[in-house]
Amino acid sequence: MEVKRETAVILKKLFEEELSARYQNAEEVLQDLRTIKDIQRSERIDFLLYLLNSTNDRYRKQAIDDLAEFGSYAGVAVTQLISFLQEDNFDLHSRASYTLGKIGEESVLPLAELFKHEKLEIRRRAAAILKQIGVQAKAAIPQLIQALEDNDPDGEVQWYALIAIGEIGVPAQEAIPVLIEKLKDPKPGIRAWALYALGRMGDLAQKAEFILVQILHQEEFSDVFIAGIEALDSIGADIDEMVVTDKENNITIPVREWVLLTREKVLKAQEASREKSRLRGGITVEWWPALSPHTPPLKDPSQFRKSITVEQQGT
Image (cartoon, rainbow, N blue to C red):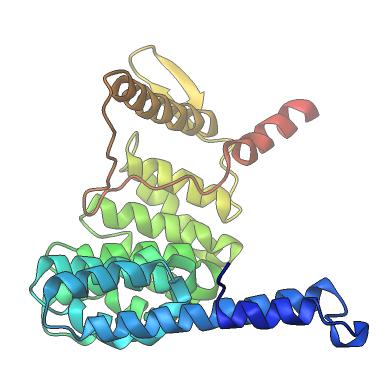
């Protein structure tokens, strides 16, 4: 049986005649095995970097895709991937976007630099990847805040930046004043995600409580309204005295319960759609259109319901 030289060295040491010459414990063996794995990974990445310089698009695309599998270890490829991100070739820049997102933290600052790019599409691509990287994009907080003032007429750069700031949460607390300003934006997607981001700041965003309450009067029964109620709850405001009116049935419902019921209804509808697709032998593709106001819950439903239970027990 033929084995690689690195493996032969380990096997030889395992079976040395002198006990003192052998590995003394399993951790020593594992360490050498890890070293082999590191060498193999490094060699593979070097080969893929070589392919990135090929004039053949097929090789370059395959190399970009394969680098994604190495995650943060492929950080040495960021500069080349950033250059592909700025090309008009759709296959190249879309693949580069995915791989830069998989690399994560090492991609953040080079991506943040692209917010200065004159081409709107390049700024959108950079913001979208930072949204994908999420909490690991902390190094780009100043640039993300600046991107909230981008002149993108469709608002996509701001939207992606808002989501990234929301995912980062408390470390991005310096964004709070700008987030409050974004609550006046005419686009519901911007308003909803600004509310989500404020909720992620916790009690640090309590100074936004008054304006949140004012805004909610204009947003009743919308996705923005749901995001606002959850944001108020997350920053420590008392929402248990708030109610919504079901005009069809002429009843009032505690707003906390209404949010839970609405969230549950949406989840059931999504699951029903998936099941229907499965029964037909198909697949379900779910995506957010740009500027969607549909935010994820700020709390797990059991956490969000907790204060109702406590109040009822007290009563």
